[in-house]
Image (tube, rainbow, N blue to C red; front, side, top):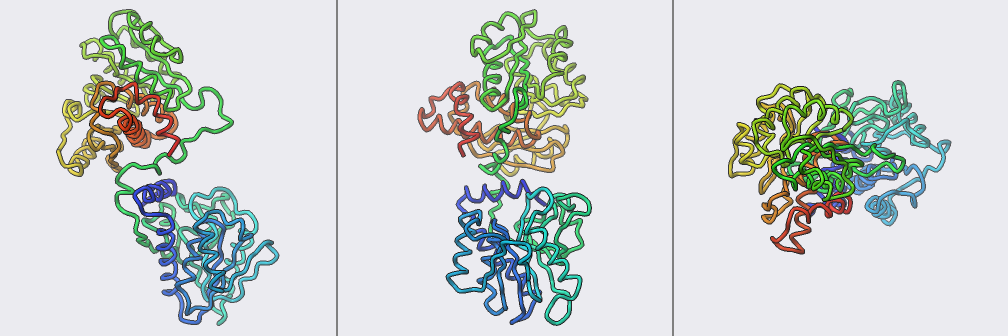
Length: 492
């Protein structure tokens, strides 16, 4: 079962794997035609009511497989306003083949005749709000036909919806315009690749059609996972995320790398809490950082109250980079996680504390395979076997895991969702790339869910590394990745 957003991401990932949307539309249209055939007889009258997006494009394709039916295509709107190139191509194919088409420019012009089957291909998944004209009147007309014996023989026509009935939220099954809003009352739904959460709440017969999307489009991260990461043009400072990096002491570079990566990955403000002796050095890495020095050579339980105070105003805390493994620092991590109830990325030496602590926080843990073993998890050479082991361990500890490796493995906190990431290269075994990843995930976790942040973070960190390796070979260093992050996030 896939949400509408996830289905759109899978479509984009399939295209990146070499299965173009045009090919998927051909398969989808064929599936719609099969559903129409199962609900009708040769020479039956079929009205296809089409929007100007890819949902309508699926119906345009379907018509070519229904030569023995009496088919009419009703396009809601002007042909020149069809929204995608592949839908326009399939519309033009109908016109060239002299298949009967009608364009509806005004609600008053709607007349679907007395069809035996009506295909609702007006709107697909991902549509919000109440239906607007002429779709609203078209939906009301379809409902009137199906409740008043509107077919030629006086029976109710069969209404088949493409992907989801227009006016219904595919994720909830509720009307998109709220309770009582107009929506098509379908008898059947033909949806693609996988069912959608809201369809199970409707009293309809659902057909899930295999349209040739490869399993890899779901299994692996891809460009589709980057959907929705753009900034609201009306947003203000801080609304795109504030991140606190807690670390440093034995090491100065690690917290600076994480903090700079968080900025490049889109956080508006990034603060670093680190020991006073290294504060100036961390600040020296970038004037864009806000550095809070804490007394002492390393972070310890005495700093807990101040760190909790700093964390209270942040969207995400990244804890662990450069922290070291001193007993006092580990005790600080233990106490902080026990008290904290927000969202945190846990990295490096701090990871070993996670299985020991009862916390209300949402944690994203970013171990490499050695650190995973140190947490009590297991790993394996085979990527799929490793993914299953990570899934089981994520469910056991109750936190999101991003386990780094040749194929990164990302598992949700309940073990219910697993994804793998194939971006990255052997040059990224150099020190500091994990710190960049932790900061990247931290910035993303301020704007999206923990699992999504971990999956996208792994993907774009690897893309940045691949871009550097293309120029520098395996001589890359961690700082090279940071300036490539915006391109990896937004240039796909």
